[in-house]
Amino acid sequence: MNRVVVTGIGVLSPAGVGLETFQSALSEGRPLGEAMKRSGRHGVPRLLTVAKIPQFDREQYLPARKLRRMGELSQIWTLACLLARTDARLDAEEASTPPEKRGTFMGTGLGCTDTTWEYLEGMLKDGMGSASPYLFAESVANAPAGHSAMETDARGTCVTLTCGDASAAAALGTAARALRDGRLEMAYCGGVELMTEPLLRVLAPLGGPSHLGEGAVCLILETLQRAKNRKARILAEIVGVGLASDPQAPATSWSCDPQVFASAMRRGLAGSREEEETGPPPSSLLLHACGWQASDEAERVAGEAVCPGVRQWAITSLFGTHAAAGGLTLVAAVLRAREHGSILLHAHAWGGGAYSLQLRAN
Image (cartoon, rainbow, N blue to C red):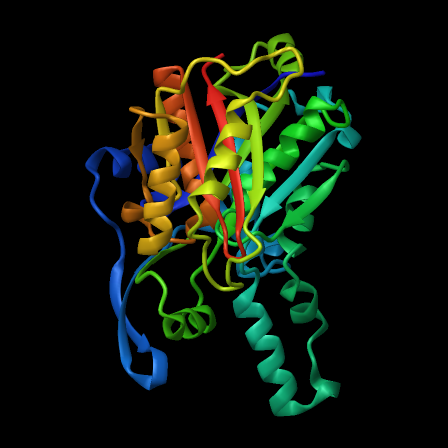
């Protein structure tokens, strides 16, 4: 059974393009976002804070002819993959891995909402005969993963997971299993979410958290042996993945059951390798902290029960709920594991899914 490590990070966040801007925003600890009003429940205006990715020149990374074939979500995710590939120094060495052994695991909780809206709006206004084939192809949630797989020549497993704002964590856990079992040697994995205007119109009346964010994160996963063979810089190792579910959770809200969260955390701490037993407690516990008060309290209680006395922290207050489908939390966890030895990350989603990942320095 293979050991799995992170060797590259690509991030597009409300702080800007690249890992350095993200790290600077973490260090400053200043919440990002712009206030805007949208129609809330019963038409009452609601004030939201929305943290968006700043505008940047995308043609630095892809030519215009390729960008024109992609919707907004596809562009952002593919660019995150290219940034991760460069960070992992794979541009010249990726050819050493057969394309069939490279996979793509993308998470998005809400998908291509802007393209879907445009497609349906045009169809309703002009009739079925005027429906755009391009918009239809780009309206499905797995379109971005397909584009990135073609751009990176990753011909192995290509999967899109839609698990709310825990989609990135689900993608990372699924990718780690594929590498651990030997089905792949490397993978592009992470999450992407955009706060489009149609989506904000839907989220505002639901009455959930008022601080929303967007972004894209891609992590390069490799087997430890492959990373060592090419003398790669190893950022962290994925040593445990735990899952749990709350069947009582509403479809458009998070679980509030600390026992469900605690089950996922314990499974994540139990280790992913058969020969590994539960080790010492992690140095810190990175919580999902979705911004829903009852859920956040349940998560805190579960963390204290599983890891008593371990420091708990979160980054949602800086970047907003839904940002990169939870992917920004993955980046923060990798950086902290590299500095402090080990960390347990917890994520959970609308509908009751819960995911815990244990990372540590290699």
